[in-house]
Length: 229
Ligand SMILES: CC(C)(COP(=O)(O)OP(=O)(O)OC[C@H]1O[C@@H](n2cnc3c(N)ncnc32)[C@H](O)[C@@H]1OP(=O)(O)O)[C@@H](O)C(=O)NCCC(=O)NCCS
Image 1 (cartoon, rainbow, N blue to C red):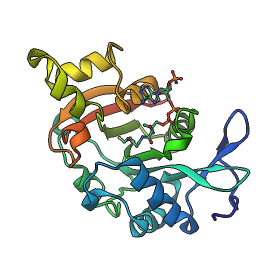
Image 2: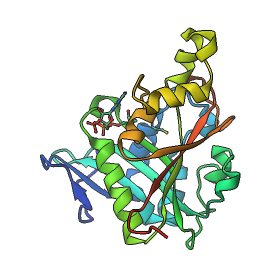
Image 3: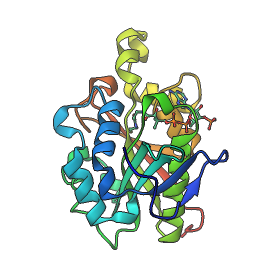
């Protein structure tokens, strides 16, 4: 079992039962387990494995967050980020290119945006505001580094099921995202990011290989309110 955190917590939950720390090399197997539990439909070639986490921790330690249950020291959730430059007129990209096949050796220390590669919570710990705590830690990092904000290709994980049952005239991914953004329907990922203040910027076809989201990504943006220019 993972030992309780050696590094000081960056944040803690309001009930003090969970803490956010920087991910450590001793956690890589636990992080890979969270990844497998979080992305059951993702192509195995795109899943992060222990070696990827080890690379991420050595390339950009500050961008790797782990959420631990304080009483047991168990890693129950995690997120991965890198710094990047973003060309908003050419936002189409493939996930694996953006994250250097999950090794993030393309992390740009002078990049003015944080690129969200991943976030996952173990299924039995979902619904307790733990991803919200990770988003808080990511936003604190963005403020500390004076970055412009956070971008990510959010996976519209309800779209695969929706598109097979919706009325033919309403099956498009754009209509789906609008409906989620307006709160008419909910999506297990998009609803979460919209609640955390992210706005949809555009649709990315062939973002990755996952039938649950029809291989789409939704490019989402959170702007740092302290960097308005
Ligand atoms: C998406 C995920 C990270 C959310 O984690 P979580 O800890 O359960 O989320 P939280 O408890 O912090 O919930 C945040 C908000 O989203 C809402 N929410 C959570 N799950 C939801 C769902 N399935 N559908 C709609 N809303 C949801 C919560 O009610 C909460 O709203 P509030 O702030 O108004 O109270 C988690 O479900 C997960 O790990 N999924 C698998 C991995 C994944 O798809 N990652 C995203 C890849 S792009």
